Length: 383
Image (cartoon, rainbow, N blue to C red; front, side):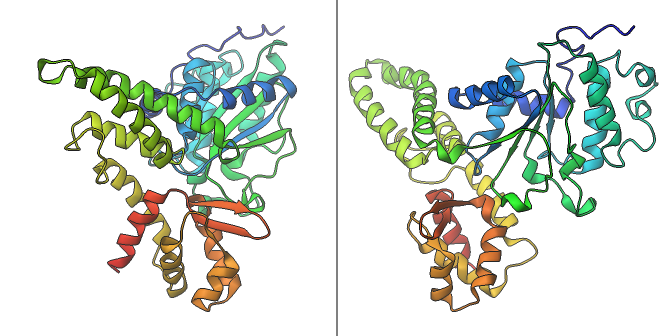
């Protein structure tokens, strides 16, 4: 008779070095996001298996949330599709299956004695989901009643879909899940019908944009936590007590930065780090974009351009970068640039991960952050 695995898997924290670095980086200076973790916990307790997906625009904190969850739940299997070379199904299946075999040695006993990790897997283990599904079922059969197998995948939107047949799930993720098995996913926005996932298991999507008040509270907590040691340092600058002067300035700055952040943690991360490093002549005077944030925007710009911008796309960019934050509908954009509405809608869909959507009588679109919109306008003016 097979002995059930222990309450937590063996070697559960032994992620590949690249993943360990990302987890450490993303979980540092983390501001608690209690509403997200509560939602995950509720889902796990409400369902015997399933997919839980966190959706958010760039910089909304998805990767940090997942990294923090992994650090506090060390039995979780982790994968990050945003790392170079990790966005293909073959690499995902190989990595995840090896993690599972090492983490549940009694399940993978027939494979774990191989001389190298590459030799652990059957030759055709990465051809579809059959081997992953087999491992998941074997682990499920041995789980104790209170035990769960959780696999966390960050940046589902980064997956290279071109190397898989069109009708298959992203990363060949299983359509069906056995009891006790859960996937926690993060991704940027895209149309549900183009999600690349056909699943028949309980599922829930938590869209961070639907929780503005909670996000704002988390942003303020993040700013306060970051600024506290900086304020203490500045209060002693010049060998005199400046605290009575700085506290009022600090409070005003927190309020202003909260508003300017538009609940975007990546924006805050780079701005606050720039302040700490003395990038600005005055600590609370933000008058230019720090290099790290500009590099982040440059990545977006390259993805928006793709293999080249069509005339229609360029006209749309000029309209959207000139528009105020309330956004514009596809119909309104069409009327301005005098192009086919279908073409406009298709381009908007391709850019969806960088857009905020405001749904009313018509869906209106705007770039996810005002600062990115203004930066993008400058890039377009140079074309």
